[in-house]
Length: 76
Image (cartoon, rainbow, N blue to C red; front, side, top):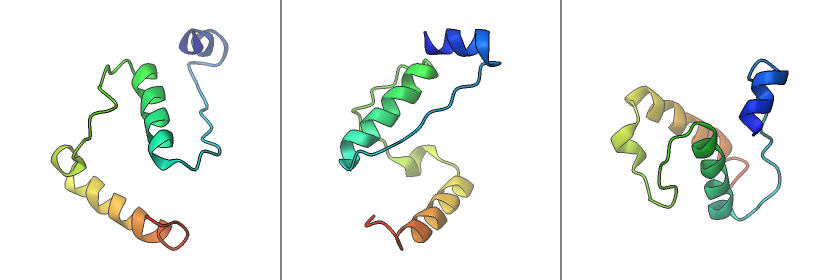
């Protein structure tokens, strides 16, 4: 329904706001479920992924840099 409304009203644009939720596991599952549904990926969101096996080396480097920066503010 959300994608249909976005298609008709706002050139298929959707804004998703991540707010609150300090249970990181629950928050991760919620985000995965939203994107899984919107992208019609049909992944098992409860299956633990190994990002090292599916991500490009450039992505892994970027992710490590982000984690380094964010670790100043969050316990990662």
